[in-house]
Amino acid sequence: MSILRLENLSNSIADNGFDGVVLNPGASLTYLTGLSFHLMERPVVFIYLPHKRPVLILPELEKAKLAELPFESSAFFFGDNPADRIEAFHSAAKELGLDGKNLAVEPTRIRFLELEYLKACAPSARYLDGSEIFETLRLKKDESEIHLMEKAVDIAQKAFQALLPQIRVGRTERMLANELTTLMLKFGSDPELPFQAIFSSGPNSANPHAAPSERELQKGDLVVVDWGASYQGYASDLTRTLVMGEPNAEQKAIAASVLRANTAGRASGKPGIQAGDVDRAARAEIEKDGFGVYFTHRTGHGLGMEAHETPYMFAENKNLLHTGMVYTVEPGIYLPGKYGVRIEDDVVVTEGGSRSLSDLPREMYVIA
Image (cartoon, rainbow, N blue to C red):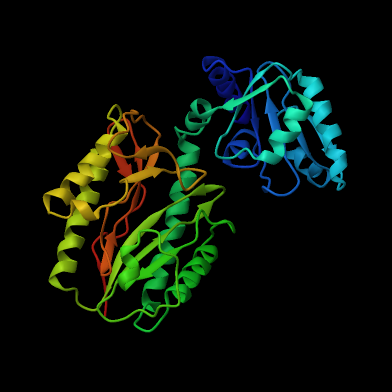
């Protein structure tokens, strides 16, 4: 699999006018090599030029991982003394002839630390924004990737269902977020979750990315729960909304509007449409109901080895959807100082349209 991915990368490098790519730890490096490294004080760098053996620069303590690499490579190691690192970078640059090359870097990943070593060893090389390469590298998921994402969704859904009986007035947001995290681990999530679970209640639920606090759930609260599991490196990302007791008329109205928007957004996806069409389909429902000004974010984002990746579902995005793309549909309405509602599902584009990987009930959950 990784050899095929390197071949696809080679084609993309050539098509975009680069000579090679430079990567540090992150999803793209893992996608290409099958190896996982932490982003830490010790640099780890992968350099690939088509038709040349890939090169890794890494600390000696990571040497054992190379036994799992699915293709031949050259590796240059350094010890704990930071002064030793430059020699490893010099050796790698010399082997690949980096000087004078146009090298694509991942703009949201590469750090000053790695760039300074590279510039010192290949001062004539140009380190350029490689977004054209990296935004499409993992864009279309194959069947094996979709299967892993379905597993991540299943873990997240089982954890949420197991948590529901434990939710009651008086419990804190942080307490419930921690219990949800524990349940995801219990049901098989990778230890490293895609993001911290969001459990926001009452006025906090009007903040789309509120962090769990010590606020206690109260009668009449709306509660937004946004969570996701990870399975073998692939993420899920779901949101459901609860109400503590019987909802009032306004709460019912915004919940119904968001549900219609979620339904429209999920139904709109198919090969050949613009990513922005998904946003427009969902947003139209909320605007029709008179709540458009309170829908303050895009309808969704791509999902895969990272919780946020391409494609991004905002109205102006003209990029076309293709079979195998996975993204979220998560419209919301947020009334400042009062409460909010969001419903989020994970959707994959199929040959005939799209299907949701998640199937939890989407109506507001009434917690008696």
